[in-house]
Amino acid sequence: MIVSAEDILDLVEESVIVRDLTGRVVGWNSASASLYGWSRGEASGQIAHDLLRTSHPLSVPELERRFLKAGHWDGELIRTTQSGAEVLIDTRWRVRRNADGTLLDIVETGRSLSALSQEQLEARRAEHRYRNLFQAMAASFWDLDFGEVRRMLEGLHIQGVTDWPGYFAAHPDFLPRAIASVIVLDVNDKTLGMFGAASRVDMVGKSIAPYWPADQVHVFAQSLFAAVQAAPHFMTEMALNTLDGRRIDVLFTVVWPAPRPLMSIVSSVPAVAPETVAANRLARLRRRDPTADGEFWCSVVTTRVYCRPNCPSRQANAENIRFHDTLSEARATGFKACGRCLPEGRSPLERQRALVRDACQILVTSAAPPSSKDLAAALGTSASHLHRTFSRIMGMPPLVWLNATSGDPDSGREARTIAVEECP
Image (tube, rainbow, N blue to C red; front, side):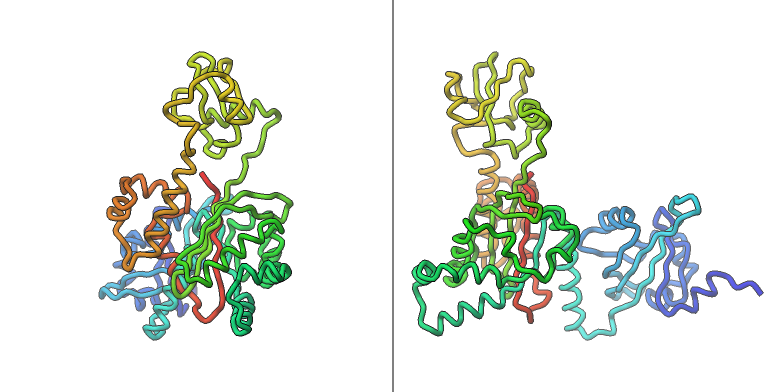
């Protein structure tokens, strides 16, 4: 007797759904019918995500794109049954391939987490949203244990210490010990490449001390002052070390939304230089590389102006462009400053960062989250410009960032999160 594949799948207690490359259901076992309410005949040929109203923090198209690139995905999805009930599904996706390696179909197995209590379910959903944001952002996120630092500060408080700057100055060994006590609990994939790690083993379970330069200890002290004074956030520019010996300039931000703080670092990583400085500068000028702003300046002999390398004005022919290491050198040409890129004022990137700083301050200090329109109005800009600028700098829109920083996936653990993102 020949047993069909459908008969075998019906013996599996978990839901098994097979989708073709257009997303339509071509396999649907009995457990799927019991879980979602549609029979095999009703589900067959339907777009699975439309039928089940699949929801995920990344958006389903983005999730599918990442899944097809990796060939596998494990996680949780929110779906809706035929009766209209919303269920949280613990899901695993795998691709099947033909003998020649081409994609055949997508096999999904899943089980409902609805047996959990409502409190447990909400906790799982919060963890689900947090972990997906943790991995999905174009930023590098660090989950850190600051428990020992808190205990060290509490000990000093019990001893009657109130002049924190004075104490740190009198005990220069305290801050290095505090930094060494901060342990990396987890990092996302973006972190590995940015900080020169081959795998999480290189970073997880170890101190942050290798990444914190000795000449930047004062920044750690300033963040502690802000925390002790219950400041809503702390932001400054600093430098960090990488495991492969680089030193990167960063915009360092600490936000303390209850009950879990978030540290955010926006990192400007230099572009890889070609064989010659001149060729590199011309290439960066041609693509209006914003990271070149402040590294060098240029002037145009035909128009007799000097500019930033990312000036939005129409670009001149290469033979008419001169490069300068400093703004003083550009001024020395006797040309006038460009009226569009304003080389004598704040750079566009500095203005963008200032806008983001102000937006963060409003978001973390407002009693209730403002709408995108109200937030933009308070900053004197348009909602679309704020959305683009904030997303470019922080890796996500303002209100998504606020939601991410307010998450509490594990409130029983002394931890912090560090976000690191490359500047545009």
